[in-house]
Length: 254
Ligand SMILES: NC(=O)c1ccc[n+]([C@@H]2O[C@H](COP(=O)([O-])OP(=O)(O)OC[C@H]3O[C@@H](n4cnc5c(N)ncnc54)[C@H](OP(=O)(O)O)[C@@H]3O)[C@@H](O)[C@H]2O)c1
Image (cartoon, rainbow, N blue to C red; front, side, top):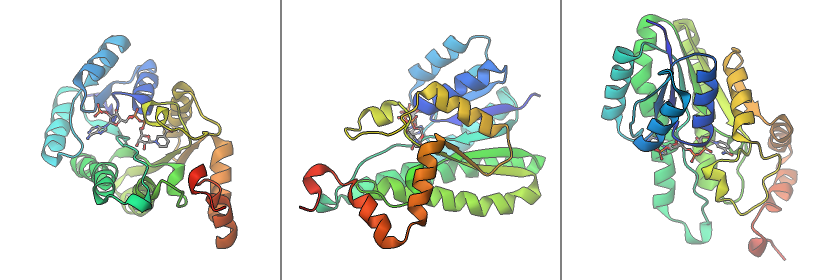
């Protein structure tokens, strides 16, 4: 049976754009998310049975295990898993809501762990597979309003670094994907300026090219990635002098 590409968070934004790009190359995509109607529309648009919807909630480990088994039974073994489902929620420490942090940890971090738990046994048994975990350049360094989101993305980067080394001897390649700003429903809600904002199709192209390589990190757009990497390396006082400027206007020190 031909291997399939499994994408979570495929009902909109980056995941949907990547699903289209992969299908364009004639590969079969198992597209997962909660919204069945969006997945069905994506499948219909691609035509030829190249995008096959497998609705699920990544916060439900049992449903994930069942969906992965169904994908492998009905569509083929998962050769590439793209663990992309994620949400953003800005937080304000003046009104810290534990629930906001819990929600992001449960979905962005634990949702990825539950997805890994579902897909890894099959890959390990076959001694073959590729896993791309979607984090963010926001995981490089703590940024104002992103204490909760950045925490989950930094956690994913760290987890992927550990897994890369441990899974390589088992024939499994782990990659981390760190996008900058991409125009999607997630960023449509941002009121602040988003430098080097990318169209989802361009981001999907860079993403897809990265998946063809074995390099650890796939990141785009390059200009923002280098600025964010430089920010990470700056001495602490200098780094904070820069990030302080990213505070919302009304919270800037006078
Ligand atoms: N856009 C950017 O600038 C940017 C930058 C850096 C990183 N990222 C990351 O890229 C990924 C995709 O984001 P996006 O910008 O494409 O946002 P988006 O358009 O809002 O897509 C998020 C996807 O996650 C799915 N999802 C949310 N909760 C889910 C759940 N419980 N179970 C299954 N799927 C769930 C959503 O589908 P349903 O609602 O149908 O479930 C949707 O398909 C995220 O991990 C995000 O953090 C985005």
